Image (cartoon, rainbow, N blue to C red; front, side, top):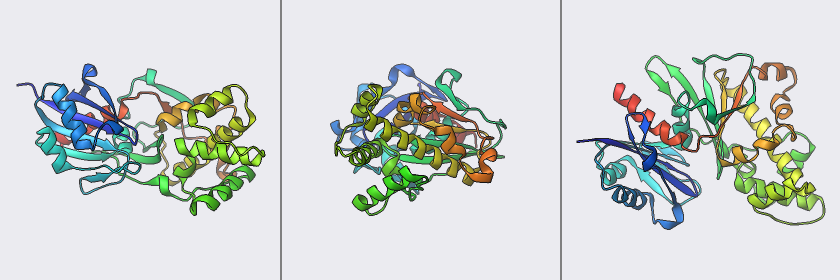
Amino acid sequence: MTLYSLVADVGGTNTRVALAQGTQLLGDTIVKHRNTDHSGLDSLLASYLKGQGQPNCDRAAVAIAGPVKDGAGQLTNLNWSIDKDTLAAVSGAERAAVLNDLQAQGHALGHIADSDLTLIKPGQDSNPNAAMLVVGIGTGFNCAPVFQTAKGRFVPPSEAGHLTFPARGDDLWDLSTYLDEKLGHVGVEDVLSGRGLERCYAWASARLGQNKTASTAEIFTLADARDPVAIKAITAFVQALGGVTSDLALTLLPFGGIYLVGGMARAVKPWFDTCGFHHAFTDKGRFSEFLDAFAIHLVEDDYAALSGCAHFLASADDQ
């Protein structure tokens, strides 16, 4: 009897599900679901397994975009929850795990093809045994440090998207003030996310006397056409990302590299150089040169979290 691992990457908008054998994802089993088509994650997974002919799964792991504690998780931007007992029941797996999505991304590092990695900034110190850092920018924002230990890889969860947004420079301070009047508290995720870019656009438009709004897709289309409001919004977003990432780098010292993941990270890729990401990242006074030690990569593998779940399950078997 062939046994499989069920793995899933649950975002605020879409869920990707696949089967794996050991650490190997089975590409022809990967299915992307719209969350709005399902009442909850358990029903989505049950529907997926039915579509795959009810495979025999002895392991299951899901990565969710939200806080996880004691084997249970709640999505931040969707009223869905899951726990390992429910996951075991719906999958039939003997062993089940619920991870934060950035934890899964952390377990994928070192197993991502070079063709799916783009170097954003070279580093001065490349040490594969040193700590690494995954920073996710998509529907929301979060990060996860990745540590190599004598007992294997350790990737603790966090909820960094809800830290207070650190504004630096006149424009970002003005953006923070503008959002504080509307939100009461400005978290990192309020700026660095899909909705965050839309807020950046609303701020830029208001400051240019236009008071317009636009979706993320519209903002990038307008920016490509050299619209000044869209460019100002993306510039604020990219510089905010540089500043927040450098704060995290100083906190966690990821000499093994920083890895940017998520749809918004990929979307602003063409704007890193023109909008001043590198300067914002190294703008730390006497520690500016120190920050040049950290290499920054963009992960362009849309299934890295699925791979991370598979590697997590395999490593758990080894321990």
